[in-house]
Length: 263
Image (cartoon, helix red, strand yellow):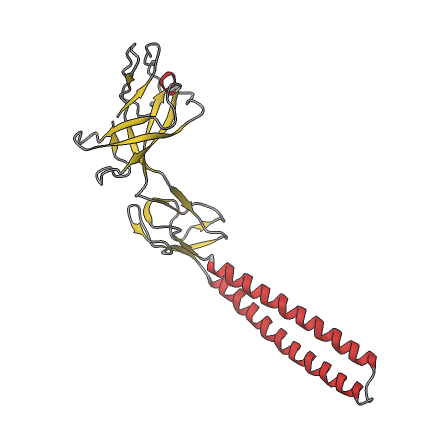
């Protein structure tokens, strides 16, 4: 991968350390107004999302594996819904009981109003009936809210893809109890890709957002594309003294698959 930067002095390669360095193949710097960087990196998705359930549960299904293509809304995994289904049925029963009590309260209020109009009832009896009707109305609203919440929780038993993409990782297996928010599946958008490289700190300090690069597929040097720097890590890695840099690719060829090595 070739990029243009202004560098005032030669950069010396750091001594090898026991820890394996990030994939930086080489860097060539000349004391000229414009110099070239020779780097090695990988193709990674610009957009990648970790998906997890919103509630605790035992996973009973995982419908995808790494490399599978998914569409938005596809069910990628599920947890045991039994307890959630019971909660919905219980909440539905509460709504039905509350509705029945409200109907009785309305009927009683109407009867007390008619009795008062015929001078056979009292104001106190009517007020009591009105209060009972208001309480019954509030009970119906509360029961309905509980039912809506129970149905929402039941919906969380299925984990769905949030966008069209490809599965890049799976982090849980069937039978495993997963916590709320625990990553189960990772999905990436394959249409938007970055070339990710680790640039030596001295060179990274000279790079700017928007700087152009030419990116070549390592296994097929004839396949290439262009891109621009979209992100430079603000701090260098302690072990390698390199800054992770992401280059947004412009209309990358199909051969630039996720994980491909580029130069």
